[in-house]
Length: 68
Image: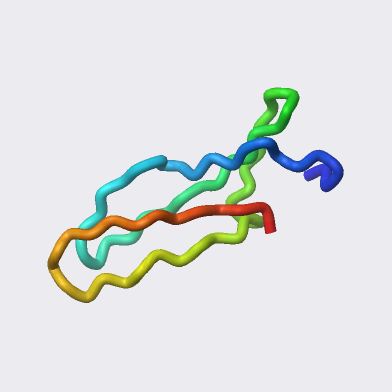
């Protein structure tokens, strides 16, 4: 990755998902650059943590990725 060329956007994929209790979902971070190219940034992204749910009630939360 060219450090002098930061991405103009980072996509988190899948954009939305539904998971059930005890399921695990793997996310990807894809960097989009100003020339239209893209790069998988999953391993170098800094990921936010969502809340942990301990009840069977449904909930939603947002997860973000930034270039570390």
